[in-house]
Length: 634
Picture 1: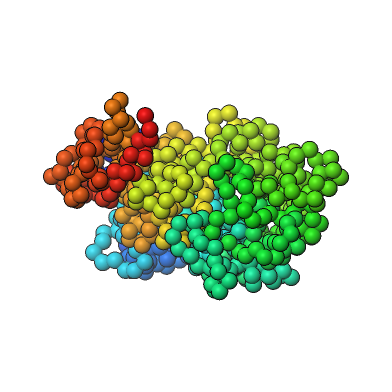
Picture 2: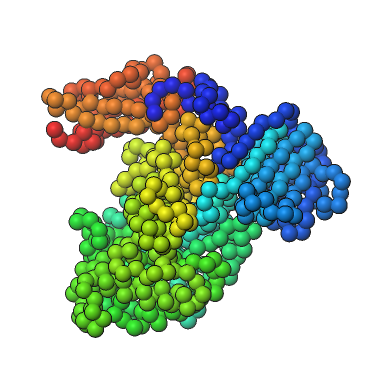
């Protein structure tokens, strides 16, 4: 990654172009795309040939085409001899395509999408829409556009079955309409799984009949803004009116909305840690005296992470593994979750449970003696096994974060691997079903640009790093890898616009990693496509991060302890200009060519990227004190 050219053709990923985008900008990259002669132009009257089982695909296609083009769309059964767009379910399944693959054929006179299942037709529609001019993304009529696309033959199918995004609606509540908005964005990139993180220390977001305090008390905290985790402890007089929850009818509506777009919803109830909202609602679920004085977290510090994981809890945010009331409570919750969500798995968390309160608990000590548990890891293992039995008794499969592997893991448990790929690899080799979501590439809450331009978080994952994600890492047993997902935790994400900003374009990278053949991935080609999709998202009014254009700033020390600054770019073809004199650099300022030493009395550095004569990156202003810290000591 440095200077040079930025885009290459999707047909031949080794062919470079100096200043033009790839000819085709389909994300994720199809298995096979062949350009043929000619082009297709939408007529004023569009005839869609389909059958009743394709209703959701047809409705989606009609909406996407009719609104921006203003063209009339008629729908007929396949008895019609001709049609503009034909949707065909193969009478004899094509084994190559599987359940979600499709074949798309565009000729000068007709568009045909063939698939074995309706899901494949839907994904064929997504690729078709990406062939049209970017204005196809508009939510209103666009005048003056020629709705023409090139003739192509596409054969496409996914690499893995589980292609997900996790949306944390517990740290900050997102309305039913906002979740639908998130679904609308993800299906454009062929994601088929929405993991909803429904409970945490900051809120319980799901109505449970018979346990009204979970949402009367547990769904509300004090609104705070700033750096989450550092807020002052709310006073007794501060109103606890910030939050919300989904009724069971809301959930049914979301499930149907997702299903109509071929998305499954995985519910997560995070226990035994991350359970402060539940403990505040029902203090008898705790091992710790005084739990009745606790309050739902508003972002104040409740954990000490200075010594690493597991953290030292400052309040006991865990359900008590030695308390039978906990298992009765979970039976009630899981019974209703299982009845609400059709998906085969229920995610029961299991991550980051602190142990310092358990170590002091007489009830836990008695449990360990009675059950022959040697250490606190085995205490959590005892809890996980009992929870798995409850989940399985409701006809569902149990899933947890990879910490559940630290004890005698239940044999039927599926593992969501987040700490690093090695835990997923180990779980697959032990014959556990695995979903890969390693934080080093897949955590969408982490910074994606320089800390001066981002909400500050403990680490970063730039787009290039996200693109390195491999859902089937070397050493894993591929038979047990179900797929992968990106995870958007929302401690620092206060609204849906920021949720979109954090998801895109890294969501493109994860989409291509879980759908496209590994050998089809090509960074230079991908970044060319990303730029085209930025224009599409502008028209769709979906927010995204432009951090890919920003310089990467590194500082180091020379032998005589001066600080040197190194500037690089994620994509090729950009020039970097800088200043130390407190003024705003443009392309007439010094151009970066090699590491620069910070002048003796300078107090800030400003940097910006250009492509030719056009400013393209954001202006970064970095204090020299910050650069000194980045350089460390020598």
